[in-house]
Every structure is written in C-alpha cells, then in structure tokens.
Amino acid sequence: MSKSVVNNKTFITEDFLLENKFSQRLFHEYAAQMPIIDYHCHLPPNEIANNRQFENLTKIWLDGDHYKWRAMRTFGIDEKYVTGNASDKDKFIEWGKAVPYTLRNPLYHWTHLELQRYFDIDTLLNADTANDIYDEATAKLQTPEYSCQSLIKKMNVEVICTTEDPIDSLDHHTTIKNSDFDTTVSTAFRPDKAIVISSETYLEYIEKLSTVSKVTINSYKALCDALLVRLDYFEENGCTLSDHGLSYVPFSTFTDAEIEIIFQKRVAKKQLSLEEDEKFQTSILLFLCEEYHSRGWIQQFHLGALRNNNARMTRILGPDTGWDSIGDYSQARTLSSFLNALDAKDKLTKTILYNLNPADNEVLATMIGNYNDGKIKGKMQFGSGWWFLDQKDGMTKQLNALSNMGLISCFIGMLTDSRSFLSYPRHEYFRRIVCNLFGQEMQRGELPQDFELVGKIIQDISYNNAKAYFKF
Image (cartoon, rainbow, N blue to C red):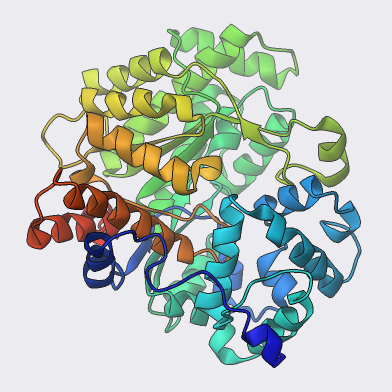
C-alpha cells in the first residue's frame, strides 16, 4: 500500500465510542478480553470444517452480505457489481466508492473496524484507497493466518452455534468435532419448513423429511414422528438449542381431528384458510416446544421480518438477496397465549425472544417478565438487537428497554446472526456501546462509581451469563 494511503488514518481509535474515563476503564479492563460465545449465527459449517481459504477480499467480505448489497443499490451501483458477473476486484472497488457515503449507517463503523481488526489496515476505505486495500487484504488472505479457523481464533471465539434444518446431515459438524479445532461449533434445530404449511414448497420439503427420517409421512402424527427422529439425531450430535424465524407466534385453539384434516387437505394440494394455517402452526409449535422442554433445550423465536418484498428481484435472484424489511405484525396477544399454554403445563423451557420491529421492544421486555418463575436465572430472555436493529441506536434502545423493565444484569448479550467470518468485531462494537452506556451513568452519578460491581455486570453481559445459560 502506498505511503499516502497508510498515512490516511482511520477514526477508529482505542477509545472509539467510549466517551469518558469510566466507559474507557469498563471496556479496557473488564469487557475487551472476555471470550466470545456466538450462540446464534449462519456461518457455513462446511467452510469451517474445510478450513476454507478465501480467494480474495470480495469473496469473504461482499459475497452474501445483504447489508452491503442494499447500500450499493441505494447508491446507484449497477447489479452486475453487486450480485452480477463483474470481476471480484471491480465489485470491491465499486463498494469502496460507496463507503464514504454510508456515513451514519452502521456499515461505516463495521467496515473500518473489520479492516483494522482483521487486516491491520488503519485507513479509510474510499474510491482512492479501494484498489490498494483490496490488494493488501487479498494477499493476506492467501496465508494460513487468514483461513476460516484462524480468523475465528484471532477473535477469541470460544463457541459458535450455527443454524441447520432438520434434514441436515450435520456431517460437517462431526468433522469439526473430530478435528483439532478448539472452538466449539454446535448447531441449532430450525424446523420452519415443517411448520409453515402454506409454503409453496411444503410438500416437496415433507418428502425430503420423510426420506431423511425414514418415516412415511402420511399423517400429522407421522410428521411429528419424523421430527422426533430428527430431534433425537440432532441431540445425539450435541444440539441443545432450537430456533424459529416467524412473522409472529400464532395461537389458535384446535382439536387433534382438525389438525389431521388440515394436514390431509394440504397433502391433497388444496388451499388452506388463514385460520387453518394458524391452527396447524400452533399445534406443531406446541408439540415441538414441549419436546424442547423435555430435553432441556433452549428455544429462540426471531419475530417480525417481512421477507422477499420485491417480487421482481426475488424472482430474478431468489430469496435472501436483500429484499427483506421490518414487518408491523401484532405480537403481544398470541405470543402471550402461546407461552401461557406451555407454562400452564410447566413445559416452558428457556426462551429467547427477538423482535425486528423496534416498536415491539417494550412488548418483549415486559413479556419475558410474565414467565420468569424463579427456577432459573434469566430463564426468559429479550434477545439482543437483531438484523436492522443490530446497530448503535438499536442496541441502545434494546438495552434501555430491558434495563427499565427487566434486569440487564441477567442479559446473555450479543450474537452475530451473520454469514460472514469477518463479523466478530460486532461483539466489540456491542461491548463498547454497553460500557459507554454504564460509564455515562457512572459519570452523572446515576450509578455508583464501583468498578467491582459494575465491572462484574459488564463481564456477565459480555460472556459469563451466556456461558452459564447455554452450558455448551
């Protein structure tokens, strides 16, 4: 890299986001060195198992990154430089042109944190520096120190929990487990495709589940039996966690006879009513959640995404290509009824609730208090800012809602929810925000200037609470 580029220093200093001496001490002495437990992400297990060496900076940093894709499109960059057939270097240079104009978007912070923490590139990315940054980072990516496993170790990651469908073989997890890689890589059971009965691909999926489970799925009971087979398989492979990505948690009363009729109607390729859809989803979710309780698993619910809004571009590029947004679904009533149905049987397991609509912050922050029964510390969790809320303002609002209406001291902290091996500085970002929040209140006299007390809570939020909660 040219001298002029090297001298173009970034704004990411040692005390980035830390506004006073209390915040700085909390971060540097208590938070910074704590290991990372990434209890929910979408990292590809095959790439960890094969210890993939990425060919260039675009492959590891831009491919599959919906955040960057949306920003590039907004800036007027042609799709060929986003997901199209332009060269990898040209794609990165176009991204470099857009970066200065992402000011006040979290991408600006993340971009420069990732360049600094992974590549020791202490400069601003822009149209003038993009070519040199691409060449320097790409050269480093060719070395063993930049393989997938090395990048994970570099960030002090102790546990990773990926997310797999019930039909997944988990072969890559077995390979990792039997290797000398010392970061624990577990999985979460995500059976959404078996639940959303009105999906166009539902019957095709049921055939796949039938094949993998070796259960002929010709009834609702058989569907449950097939899911039990896969739950057993996941449990045998170390899984203790489930995850559900839903618009909202449904709740509708039903009879067993009704559910069988609904299932057979779908098998016959007849259209279901919204009422039938919700009855079916309620039934199968209750079945699964009771199973999670019996096995001592933890369940997660990611609520509120409105997916694949742009029909034209989804048709061209497929789902999960950057056309999702926040939904405004009603959450409180049915979520309460659902959790109450489980609690009434004393079959409500540890639960983490995430919202995508910030208007639901206080809803979830108060909902978890309804079902904390004193048996387990922090049994019900209001999950960290998710997706569009995974930024300074979103995190701060989530932290404040939880502090005001629950116990922030019991919070299990940050996760990446990412597909990128360069996303782990987001844990540092989160910790800086938490430390600054506490540090500001210590300076104002709203909290005691007791570092033993406050520092312990910072470490608990950063690591200790998750360590105790998940017991990986």
